Image (tube, rainbow, N blue to C red; front, side, top):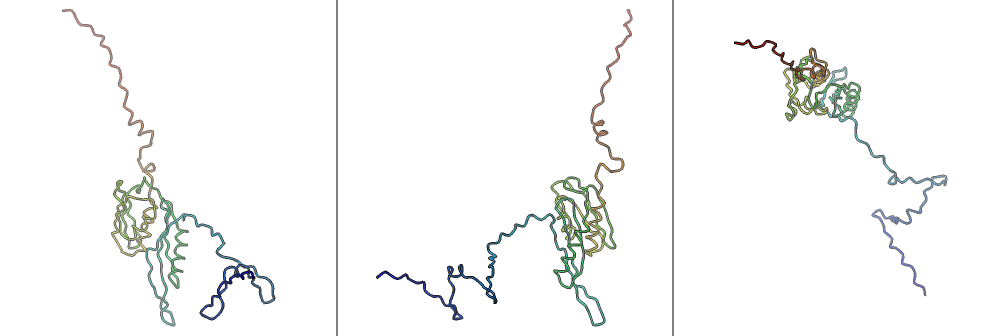
Length: 229
């Protein structure tokens, strides 16, 4: 007698139902109430598009809980301060409120993208010293030599870290309000003027002319003859 094929043992789940093996699951067709065949979509076979590198990097500087007194009591909301930049010469700051943290951060990010500025740089530092005041905040920004790094406080460091500036000296001389300090930093970066546009700055032609040594005139020959004694 021919040997009968060995059947795979049935696997019963904890709920008491039979567990379907892989072969049966692959050939099984799913039908709806009317009996029509339903297309099975295997999500695992979908090729997800790889997300490319982000053009802008963002950082949440502060999230505060704010309240407003209304007729029925206090209404609690959240305020987010977000900075965004491309690690070059574009940066922006946004502030927004929302009923939850996620909504507030999303709104602030959108505002920061719309309010981005492009500022001038001198290598890996700022062009010149600036001191800007926004309400109570007073921020001093100074250029630094290569290798100095970013010497700044929390809010200023967070914003400068999203730019291409690698060497900077900064000092906050006024209020400690993070929102005002952030806007003061943005204003200081906006005021940067490149060296060639400074008042009284030497042009490249003038510098080249100054570096070139002046030609010496040949000494005049003495026409006087020695008198015979």
